Image (cartoon, rainbow, N blue to C red):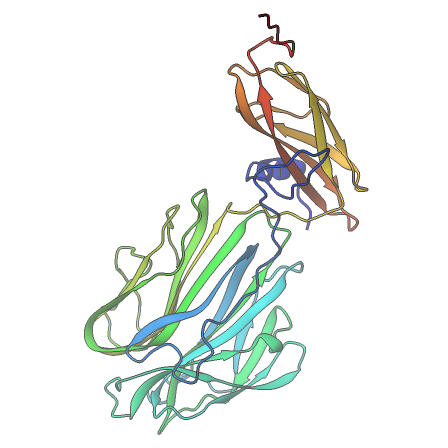
Length: 401
């Protein structure tokens, strides 16, 4: 994936990237460009991992270009109309060709006794795998006279081959265990993107026999800069009566149609610096199990562009005006130069001269846009502190005794 020049220039305003030292000078704000962080499941204890009667952290990651895609199916057979027959088709789409798969999970909820579940996954490349599911929460029965209500999670990362149809079976249905439905979540990172993605998922089992329930997600802090493209989602089992109201990320309650397994994913707003998120359900006269919920947002907390073999640096002479000399120590050819002088002024010259209205220390950054070995547009940046003296001053300091 390649960036246009205008888009790349906009992305440069996000902040500093890789910094180096030259001639004994120490660059400031060492915000090194980050590779996608390792996705992780939080907690590897024996079952249940996260909770009986509550939800807890299951997954959390930040990475350049992190995003996700989902697919869901209603599977249960104890109700009418019954769920889809197995193996059920879960269609995954929207993963860019340049993306790297970080993690993939399948969640389901069931009425039953917590029997071990092994699912069978055939990916679009027709490779079949068997994956054991982990019991992540148990709570009271959802008014069906089953032993309990349960929630399961399976890590299916090894089965993911990209976009396409995944055929999945092995979920128990009927009696004594009946899975309401399942959702597949594929989490990926596209390092050619110019933004950071954050995803937090909690899971467990939280059953109510009618009426409201809510829980507050914690353990994250949104970027203090620009936050955009936020989404919130929730998976709830056994909704069967109209009038269901969901609250996702503290939004005003909204109605969804009952479908026995409801996986709801909607746009939301995440405020800069936000560190809590409220999720809730209210449906009079119906029994249900909240199995998972999550929050996603994009931000400019880190600058995320292709890394390439450009190595910007610069020197300067004079103290006001200051004459800057930019150069590239790398092998990647320079497409353009972009200077930020720390007082709001900018330049696209290779060797600009800049005057400061007020003396003092200024963070000056040079970014060079270049072309990597794969033909991708990329950029690198370096910043130094530059001292500006009184306007039109010089470096001669007379003194007498």
